[in-house]
Structures are given as structure tokens and as C-alpha cells.
Length: 79
Image (cartoon, rainbow, N blue to C red; front, side, top):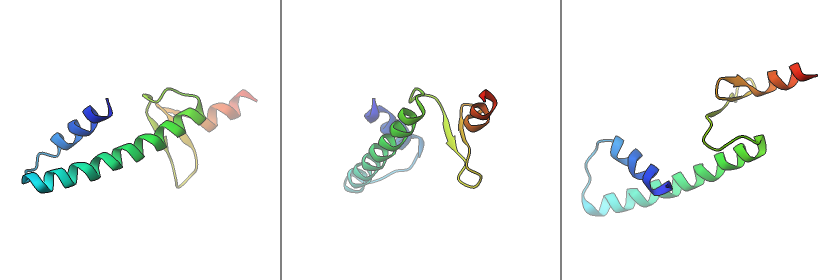
């Protein structure tokens, strides 16, 4: 599945390469996607939400949004 996502993103870029630079770029892109996937899988695991759900971290203000919901707001309302 990860290979399919990588290839889809590379195709969406709609740029052309020669064979050697394509292989080099593809390797770097695969490494980036693997690292990114590991990071977001870790975040979703710690939040106890499925990996497929959209997660957004607001670095400026601190809240974490899962889907369209503010995770901290919901926790505060439960008290």
C-alpha cells in the first residue's frame, strides 16, 4: 500500500525525468514517505485513533485536531 501511495504522489507531480534521476528521486521520495508514515502512525497510535483519520497539529497554539474536532477541547468538556 505504501508503494502505491508513493507512486500516486510522484505521478501527481506531473514532471519528467531521465531514468537515472528518476531512480534517485524515487528512492529519496520512498525514504521520506516511510519516515512520514512512521511519524503519523506513532501519533495516531498515541491518540488511539485510526491511522486513516486526518490529524492536524497546530504548532503555534498547541491543539491537535482529529478530523474537524479539537482533541483538547473535547477532553476539557468531559471534566
